[in-house]
Length: 386
Ligand code: UD1
Ligand code: UDP
Image 1 (cartoon, rainbow, N blue to C red):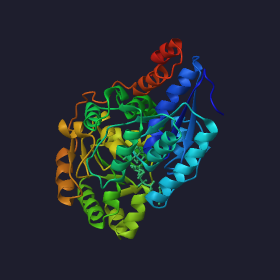
Image 2: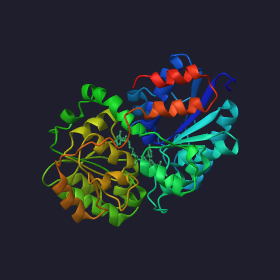
Image 3: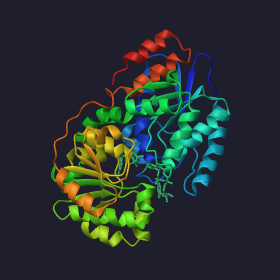
Image 4: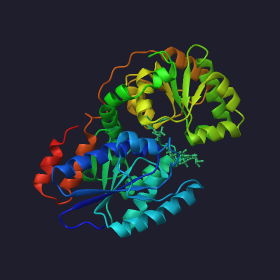
């Protein structure tokens, strides 16, 4: 249903796991504000990029994300196929619903397709998690981010470095809003629920601070047999002294099978299916060390004050490596094993690099303020509880 002059209609596009986490806090902020009066409505579009129950449904259920208004059912295929099919399907939803604006999250193919579909229809785009750069153009995510940032008229940058990156690319400062990170908002909001509702530690027989939590799904690691072998070997060596829990992303399960590494991984590591957000929060908070190639999980390690090694050659979250709470170890088995063992249990100080847990509210205030909705709406937006 198209919006009216006195109603702000914000379409949002999600598709992949980290976007559900980001969208959960943004959607919640929209619902809270809408309840207090301002005429604001979200049209939630799920591209279908992630579709297993453990990669999608569980997040909607646990995190109270509204049912998508539109589910496009697009997944798999080459990057071009996936992006092209999403572009066409998102365009037709935008034509039908005529939103005032589109909000996109992160750096996936769903992000890129949403941005392209909207700008071509003259619908302004706001990008949540703008300005992140790995400076590695071989990463599909880097290409998606650079294009999404250029196409967006509001850039919600989570860190000072993200602001700096955008300015360096010539983006004028009134398009950039430094907000803090919605993933920190999510962690703050859901941690209490995770503590009371998740029994994952007892289910897996884990002692707090007695295990390593690992995640691996980046294409550069899964699609390269030598890198994946290095990671399995390195984590396997760490597992000689304490359990290493690896919730296995579907891409990684396929790659372990394809590269004949599944038996080795199963014999040394504790492989489990991907877990929902509440279990993940508990697994992260209880770990003695996190070893990951995920963007989101690197930050969450820091939020939970857990030492992290990152199994990549570079990272976008440079403030964490800068203060020494995270360390790049690549896919090198020796480094993973030795640096992981050295950092296990290391105390980490939280220095509040990612805002105050109200990034989503700040974003909404900004969107409402720039929309022409009345000042009362803006005041309400400012007072919504975390
Ligand atoms: C995508 C994002 C990546 C993000 C990650 C989060 C792109 C280019 N990549 O990577 O930036 O960090 O999501 O997890 O957008 N699959 C399933 N079931 C699912 C989802 C995926 O079986 O629910 C399998 C399919 O075989 C699919 C493969 O995993 O072809 C890869 O999925 P895809 O969405 O293309 O990329 P991700 O590796 O998940
Ligand atoms: N996550 C989860 N269950 C898992 C693995 C990850 O809930 O089994 C959460 C994690 O806590 C974080 C988000 O998914 O909030 C990160 O997604 P992912 O690592 O897939 O993508 P990235 O952040 O690298 O783009």
